[in-house]
Image 1: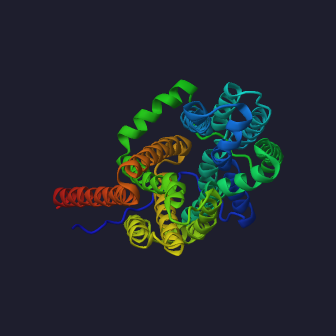
Image 2 (image 1 turned 180 degrees about the vertical axis):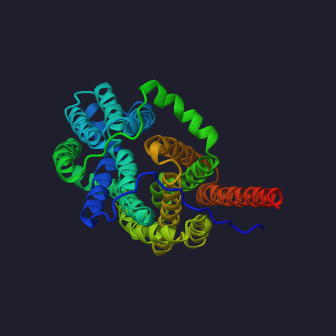
Image 3 (image 1 turned 90 degrees about the vertical axis):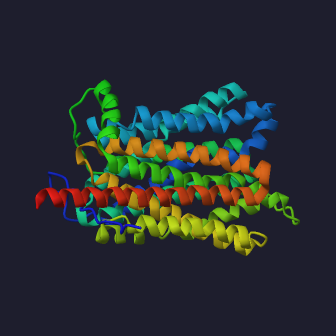
Amino acid sequence: MPALPSFPMQTSSSPPPRSLRLGLVWLMAASTGATVANLYYNQPLLGDIGRDLGASGGSLGLVPTMTQVGYAAGMLLLVPLGDSHERRRLIVVMAALASLALLGAALAPDLPWLIAASFAVGITSVVPQLLLPFAAQLAPDEQRGRVVGMVMSGLLIGILLSRTVAGFVGTQLGWRAMFWVAAGLMLAQGPILRLALPAQPPVATMSYPELLRSLGRLARTEPVLRLHSALGALTFGAFSAFWATLALYLQSMPERHGPEVAGLFGLVGVAGAAAAPLVGRYADVRGDRRINALAIGVLLASFGVLFWLGSWLWGIALGVVLLDLGAQANQISNQARVYSLRPEARSRMNTIYMTTYFVGGAAGAWLGTAAWTRWGWLGVCAAGGAMSATALGLLWAGAARGARAARRAARRGS
């Protein structure tokens, strides 16, 4: 197999600041986690929502579905504005709109209202996808991977803990209370970010239609973006295949573990997510794809652990730590590389990458559920392992193409 080549990071034409305050990075990480959690609060509360609003089955399933559809729409239609508008103002506006959408969910008198409010929650909760390129723009080149890793750790921790928090608050105070609490967090977040974040002028003078048209052009002309988007989609798909079926597997065990046990595994997964800044620091030093290969290898190994040791809760916990570490490490390496490509198009590059990433996650959740229905836990582990192995194969194929291109260039130069 060909060796994985090193690729020098491209830098912005305008030099970034020499340092970035650690407190500001952690604030962006916390805001990222608090906002992305809006997308997942409803999942453990669906039973209570159905009983309160008299809904069940497929109609109730539209609540989390439309939240995700709204988020995909927000990434595609709103995140590109970060290149042509002042990002700080855009972030503050979106936080305020997310607060209003969450209030709409808390006050929903019936299911159609809640479905519409859920779509609004999704489309307005794109602050993380604005903060990530914001952080990448602020960070010096030699710190970009570490900074992106810290902010991304907030995103993954928000995803992992959102169901645990919602289950606790919903049990103690009712499902509407969770949306009231989330609305208050978003309302407070806006002024805090307005005061803490520096102004970041637009980096592209383009009309909105031009911004959207440029997405296809960027995807066609940036092979590195296409490769890392595919790697992100496959690994997040494997990640989602596990989390979409974990509660079903725990319930099928002889002990009949309930949803509260499934929620506790989110706390276990935080250990893997907490390693993200270390991965980002390594990405700053190496600047190549070796970390992708190592991360995807860890992800693949996690499904072996989950299959062979999945009969015990401690075995599942070990698998969860490896799963989250591998998925997060691959994500950090992907984004560090994507953000280094075109400094003037970071929001649009993030749109392409993250839209592909979440499409992969949705496909992985569907595949994991289908595999569980037909083949049980073996099917889930096989599906996750197959997606991880496919990502490794894609990475090696990309390395082979890069090596051949380097040899051709060397022959032309000689």
